Structure formats: structure tokens, C-alpha cells
Amino acid sequence: MNITDLQGFLTFPLIDNSWFWGQIMLGLFLVFTGILYFEERQRKGSANFMSAAAVGSITTIVLSAVGSLLGIISSLVLTVILTLGGLIIFVWFISKD
Image 1 (tube, rainbow, N blue to C red):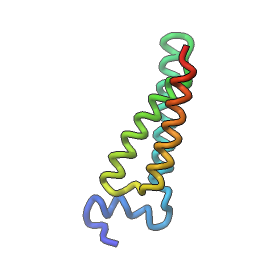
Image 2: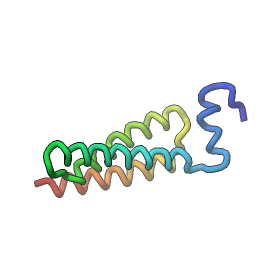
Image 3: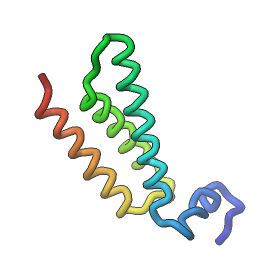
């Protein structure tokens, strides 16, 4: 594998673990969701977890789509992220107050 360019460097972890970038996206989702939830809770005194999770899902879906265009996220990982993110956004839409 050629790791002299950026794409080669970013795809290098996929040799050992094909879900590497999926795990990174899961971590980013958890960080975004946690930051949004606790910031809203601190600011307003109460927070809506589903809205924080929906915004985290949208962010993760966008980052995954960019990663897919760069060739570092496989179509299987992108499909799983789109499905789970879409499910979270759907649940948020039907549970709005």
C-alpha cells in the first residue's frame, strides 16, 4: 500500500480494521451529542436528548459522506451510518413536542 499521499495515509488503518472510520464516526457522534446535550442542559436547565442526537446524526452523516467521497469510508459503513442516523432523525421528528 502506498502511504505517501493523504488518501493512502487515511486508508492505511483499514488494512487491519475495516470498521476503523466507522468507529471514529461513532466517537464523533457521541462527542457531538454529549456536547450539545450538556450545553443545552447547562444553559436552559433541561435538555432534549433526541434533538441533540439528531443534530449529532446529521453532523456524522455529512462527515461520513465527505469521507466516502475521499475514499476512506466504505459503502457498507456509509450505509450503516445513513440507516442509523436516519432512524434517529425519524424518531426525533415523530417525538417532537
